[in-house]
Image (tube, rainbow over all chains, first blue to last red; front, side, top):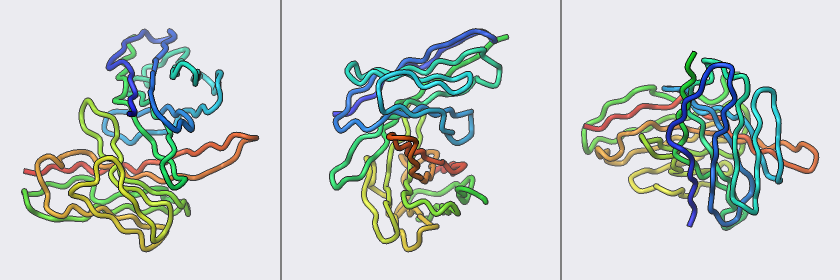
Length: 113
Length: 118
């Protein structure tokens, strides 16, 4: 089966650092994505990991360990506008050579002053 | 360059009615897909298409049909609406680009259609 777990809610303080974890179980793993979704809006792409290690992009970093089925998204210097849901998604091979994205339920992050 | 557009933004249907949710893209992306998003659940794939003339089922295809006659358009049809289909529907497209040895398959989402079935 395929399963993705991430915390439902998190809170943090403006200016701080927060780490959002994601664990997954899937066959045919072909990459892990993080998306940001503000309330009432569409998801927007944040990061992509297919190899083990850390990918850094400005205030956002994403880490992957394929052997542990584990990823995290690290947000530094939190701003109020970072209050949103963060979606972990795993890409898996389908039969026929195509891929599909499997999404976790998302983590709602609330940033407080 | 409009990206991914969806119409309508909001829709209320009565049980048993049929309708089509429109999705259009101007980025010449081959891969398009439809998701539904429900509270407490992740985005779930309904149908997808890897190119014009090719469609396939995702995780939750029952009650929905799709077609892909052009690269640009990927409409989603509700055959006979049910209250269980009340949801937010997102269309997404995908491009493929290479960065060194790693290919990034980034999906672009439309703004969504909020559907209520009474």
